Image (cartoon, rainbow, N blue to C red; front, side):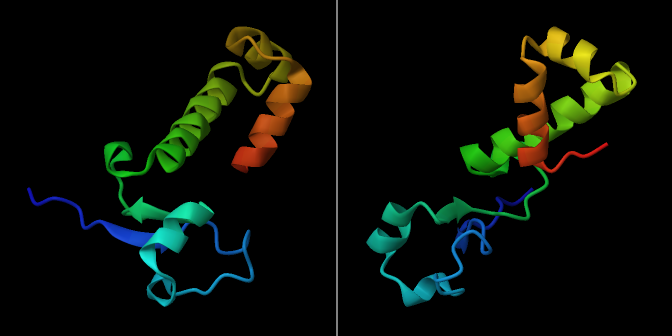
Length: 100
């Protein structure tokens, strides 16, 4: 198997509307300092081929979706199992784009 192609990409285009779409338009040092650009393969299927922030987000989404299935959507039981406050769990799920 070949290694995944690594590239610099705009992490969340809608979050920084003033940034240019093409990373080549900025010097590398400026791209890395801004935090808006990341190195990696944003389309990688394997969590290990993603930057930490993207891998963590993917893992958290999968984790909470699994808990929703296990506890049949009971937010109180999910929060208790995860060791979180219900309000914090709601905020986390909203941030991850999990709505049920």
